[in-house]
Length: 464
Image 1 (cartoon, rainbow, N blue to C red):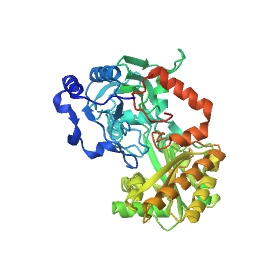
Image 2: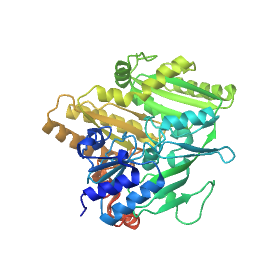
Image 3: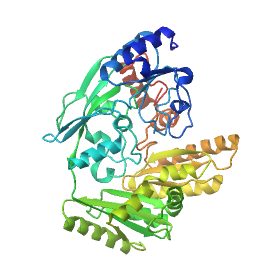
Image 4: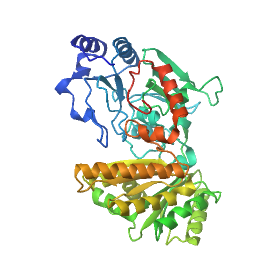
């Protein structure tokens, strides 16, 4: 179906991108054959480090003409194999396209290249008294990757997800055409929203080379509240009541004592409190101390009324750093605690979070494996990890398959979906097909064919 890279192709790629930016064979680091979790592995035939939209357009024209598969990669922090070149071919690395091109204070937008890191954009926005609200846990991910997976993060409760902040995209099609989708406008009902099709498409429809993103004014005050509960059930059951209280926290995160202890061990730093089994971590922001403190007070009193054991205000820089650095390290801490792991990134209705978490505890007992979790309680997005520990290969494959089958089926029963923010990639495509059924998958495949009838752009992902 696909053609292999030839020496002549490599010469053409060197002409387009520069010889120093084209690597092949043993010159390519093994790191480019997998993503953060590493369960799916395949090396590209050629790695090309790109710097400009026009380079990508020329490369895609070559790939289209020769029917060579192309996969785009940012920082490689994905967890479902989206950036793994499962058909070989060309791997385009966009990390060198890392410039912040424009800050438009009048329209509250910032224009960036796809290789800008989330933490770089967040710092730039804050330095200029703005906030870029999407806040996924992996701050070293690229903005291109965030857009490609429609990443959400901890502030989604109040501010929404990445799609809500994408105003305009410059993209390269599989045939090498350069298109501008959307615009610097707050409203748009001008035909089908092609821009919104691209957001969350995991690099299967076109290649993002520039993005205009919406900013909001930086809130002047931000305070966190750490609320311990006697068990996870009471902690999770508090969340819908908090949401109904007419206070809108910026973030509502849940975490267990075990996960916090993993993080303490991993970071070598103490968490403010580890005496209790379950915690909710909330953040409130606004423009006045009085407003934020009133919101925080109301939620603290509500939590205490419904069973919380205490409510710790996290207002000093030292406390904030201790709490949020621990929260940010959960994934790496769990990963460091086991020999191998895989993730179930489901999203369920908020009032079903407790039922799903209890189901994972029961599943852990039945299978005899550790299944720690944490996540965004305020929007129902749960990050559940199956730990291999000392299982042999056959045991691991069996238990992994059983756990995933059970958890995705449970998510479906509860009205949920197979991914809240990490995407489908290669790892979850069969579960997506089972969840959605024939017609929605056929529609997705039809959209893919309109963009990419040769299926050369990130093949083998989502629904192919």
